[in-house]
Amino acid sequence: MARKIKAYIDTSALIAFADRSDTYHALFRRLFADPPTLITTTLVIAEGHGWFLKRYDRTRALEFLSMVEAMRPLKITAVGAREQRAATELLRRFSDQDLTLTDAVGLHVMEAHQIQMCWSTDFHLGLTRVPLIIHEF
Image (tube, rainbow, N blue to C red):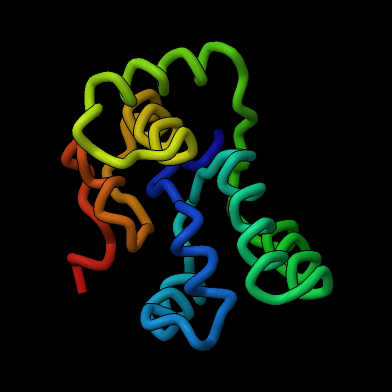
């Protein structure tokens, strides 16, 4: 039987874990030492890769992808038309917020999988009342 997904992981958490200069690096280093089953999306991975490419270089961007590939237990879910439609509805619902499509897809994934915790430093990911891990420490 597959392990129940315990937390959604956002780009900001992956960046904090991989980038020692990040304010939340120590927290995410501790959390990733013994992670529960995590889920994220291909959009989060693309966003993280782009961040390292722009902030650093191709080498760091590829190292980021290698880090993600090695993460266990991490489920990476593809984003298709259905997820995009659901995310677009969330963007409309929260039109007073500066949500990205990646954030909105994350909100949808948390709702669809009944996830009770979000590993993120981005307050937008708490809009649907799923607690952010940074508020728990």
